[in-house]
Amino acid sequence: MKALRVHLKDGGYSVFIEAKGLQKLADHIIRHHLGEHAAVISDETVSGLYGHRVIEALGRKGICCELHVVPDGETSKSLDQISKLYTKLIESKLGRDDFIIALGGGVIGDLAGFIAATYLRGIKWIQVPTTLLAQVDSSVGGKVGINHALGKNLIGSFYQPSFVVIDPSVLVTLEERELWAGMGEVVKYGLIRDGDLFSSLEINLDTLVTLADMDAIIEIIFICCSIKSEIVERDEKEIGLRRILNFGHTLGHALETETNYAYFRHGEAIVHGMHWASWISLNMGYLSESVFRRIETLLERMPVPNLPKGLKAERLASHIASDKKQSTAGLNLIILEDIGSTTVVKIESITELIETWPAFKGK
Ligand SMILES: NC(=O)c1ccc[n+]([C@@H]2O[C@H](COP(=O)([O-])OP(=O)(O)OC[C@H]3O[C@@H](n4cnc5c(N)ncnc54)[C@H](O)[C@@H]3O)[C@@H](O)[C@H]2O)c1
Image 1 (tube, protein in one colour):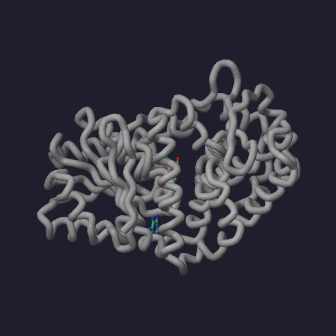
Image 2: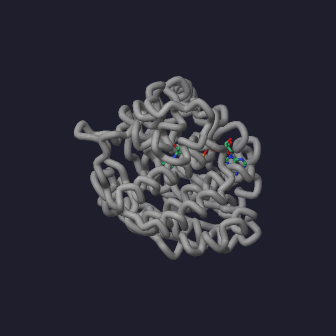
């Protein structure tokens, strides 16, 4: 087993990474004294594959759980779904000494974490991420939240889990498209912080996605979680450094919102967003042509849907303007100075910087 600790002012928490780690969930719960009654929040696909198995295994160790299932996908990160779940938790008499288990991808982590942060003014919760994206990124750091019709992740909080159990063996049931979407966030970690990771992806990207080498996957998860925890330790509430984790997300979120969360997987939209941000880095003279070409070559190897026809740059710009990362004095964009090195620049003419982006013009 690999493990790392996220050190925070109030003590922090551990992240356990282990193939077949799901089988040890009850032991972790008992060791952390989390209690004997939990609500497992999951989506239809994951609950069908793993939900009942998890509940039975926990039951055998004296931990009694109710399973609450929401539809798959981004639309479950909604006020409507939150409201239904609160009702179910109250009806099942989940109390302040009980806890929540988020069993699923990033959608379930964000949703269940937000419920944990707000139900009875906050109860304990744990993350059991089941997509590559959630295992390398969203399960660590305590950002929880839901979407609003006017934009993505506009309602939320910072609320850290008691621990995270990452079992990469569950990735074998994940669709290949989801694995590639998760790889988008892995590439992000290489670009913002780790040139060696990026170089290894240039060699191994396609092999990694086959999951043939579980040790290599565990290593990638460990590297990404270590980078994320180091950043979160230094800036838990995203006042400064943590903003670099949003590299590629400015345009990425706008693309997701504009296409009603139905066209791109989150990680796919981020691949386009990273391409745009890298192009701006080149365009503004921060990044060399040769480094930009390396980045573009890797991103173009990733099988993500093309930008849909008919996209309007002004509409994307207006989504960006209502994004919470927009300050009144202009847009703060994370751009690259090199692979593994970022800086922040203020952008005023977003529409023009979308319209003149060659990938947008060529769509
Ligand atoms: N909180 C954060 O720091 C943070 C960071 C990055 C992304 N996010 C959020 O994460 C979300 C995207 O997460 P995601 O890409 O994991 O999507 P997701 O949670 O929608 O999961 C994708 C699909 O995979 C299925 N699935 C999950 N695990 C599976 C498994 N093991 N086998 C088979 N199918 C499985 C799900 O049912 C779903 O249909 C977005 O809402 C994004 O905003 C949050």
